[in-house]
Length: 336
Ligand code: PMP
Image 1 (cartoon, rainbow, N blue to C red):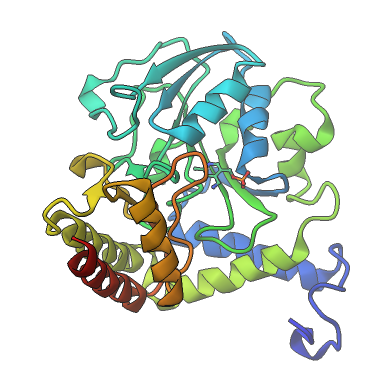
Image 2 (image 1 turned 180 degrees about the horizontal axis):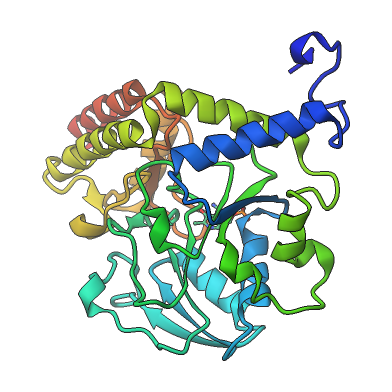
């Protein structure tokens, strides 16, 4: 990073128009393409603005037909995405909440979509609620758009099934400040003319993700994360590790005689964000404080949600999960 291949220049100070940076950008794109097994007709875009900006750019770019879209909402981020899209067109929400709570995902065969919708949007892993799809959604020919911010590269996705997949990089891809959008090329042709250039996927694709200066440092890091993931054996191998990590944590919850209560329905349990509750908020607060003293940080649930959330993304080591399980057993024995 400080001296790129003997050039005496840091990746962060070289021009984004230089050949050197061009190679760095290519490497990051190739890494994602090969790890996700993307078909040839998919373009990879790197954008600023986080996944949140995509909540707006997706309807702006893709609502070019009937201006109707369907949002399958299984948690807090899906709700936000639907709300933002409703500024641009007619949004039908398929709400999966039961008694006001997002704890499950519908089965594929329970779902029916409007055949004239411009697209169907869903969130493959709801980061706050801890609810994950175990299958790739099929919308019977309607373009499927997926917010995969918190489970991209954690397990195989059937890329063929998606018209657009997007993810803020900061969980499994690289540092914050860059968002990955994978788009099927035929969708680029449907984008309405006259969008502001930096909001126009076609313009961004035509400029190789560099209509202006991109986040060069984050893109460099993406290339390195892809190398690391390949060394682990790729997405298929990390998926097995993720499965093992999540399984043992849920087993610890389920075997606690109700001291810990898992939030999501077993069939929709997230392998990335394990959410659970203790009997009352005071006990949860004590759990988090004592866990912190034991070196286990970041266990407080999202500020809008409460409870406990163990986020165990690709980079989180299995030993960390083992340490958490040990702590949970010991805490339950002392407080049960
Ligand atoms: N969607 C999901 C599923 C997320 O987990 C997040 C962030 N945690 C967002 C969207 C928003 O991402 P950003 O902060 O990159 O805008």
